[in-house]
Image (tube, rainbow, N blue to C red; front, side):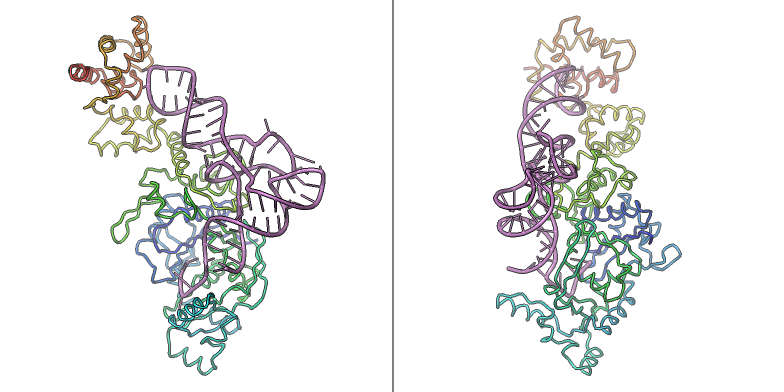
Length: 521
RNA sequence: GGUGGGUUCGUAUAACGGUUAGUACUCAGGAUUUUCAUUCCUGCAAUAGGAGUUCGAUUCUCCUACCCACUACCA
């Protein structure tokens, strides 16, 4: 029994999409559940699409999510570049493994599983155009490989000459003409494909001396002793090629098992989730904020105020379910509960509302102290500094009303400063002489209150006082609330008074009643 | 076009071949509350369509429809 080893192999062509995070997460959960290793490998074999900063972004994003690799990066999150006792399979960037692949490509040619192709990009484009004009699709395989310029059609001497003198040739896989490839997928079960419809994929490019995905992927998974490949559904069509490559190399016995995950779909309409959908519907598509080279900013879950645990929890349940009705899972619980056969085959439409709900749930699970700490910088943005003990009390009262820490300010700003305006609608509704007069008396009662200084005592005293006078509770209280918060909504009066103190209370009452002339009628 | 994959309330999903097809989010209504929010209760809402196998099909088979992916010297 081999030790479980799985890998997440992103291409550093931009920020990591939340679908990519989910793929990484499932890999991680699977590895940890089986006591195995989770490896990060950077697939940067396409030099044209390389984006500076993308690799760091990917590693930082995964770390934010609590997805920590066992191999591939060092303690600072950098990709390990030299083999060591801890990381014997290094380097983990394919661009740094350049020297490894050529001999494998040549091994396949020698064994007759691949051949050299000398067709230029222009020649191939011309072939495609020709086929298209005839209403067909050009496909580089048994149908026409014998009409093209390659080591199958050229003499040995010519081939040698071109190999030595030109630099734009490639190694292509020689796809069998008519063979059923039988495959098994951990999520989808048995799949069969006839090779007739497949093409002779490029495996290695002389121009940059780098392999394409297919070769690099098989060679590295083999060398890194990967036991399960858990990747996106977009790879399913190339699975036959990968099976055939393992066979051609003679690695069938140690071939990893495959699991192809469905895609994350956009919340409305059809198609996969894209950055544009996020911009349009107002939710992030990326875990972290990303600023591209043109300076354009793309929002991230972290910066939008999501807790990483909530983000991960939400993602885990998008396409997988525990088989129970439990919805809230810590990472450890996910590791225990995860199971590949509960992974959904169909694509999952992302639901931004549910993502918010998860964050709300996590927010209320946090301690008042922890949330208060997070609230400090938000307050600072509004120029407010506060005693920490007081802040904890405030947070305790408002956290059930919020989805994000940033909501705290909108919910409870009036606990930190007096209102400057009074909502017109609420004023018109409550600020009437028959309410204002008793309200003033209630205010005096509060100012003179000398009972226990806590919410329950004050509240009880207030209720007794108002009921004893047979005033309309709601209307009178709302008058006072208007004076304290500037609107007809907010915390209970007793809560507010306790938190802002008698002095501030009286000052706000005074101000509101001084303005009474202008706001009454 | 070709190849492969997929299809249960609006969304995420549950349901040994036998259930009044369940749960959560959203939405609507109600109760509680000094307002707002919370909380609680109630409600709306689904097996894509058609054959077949079976005493019985959401579940198994086939066909159709629709959706998705792939079809690069990108991953």
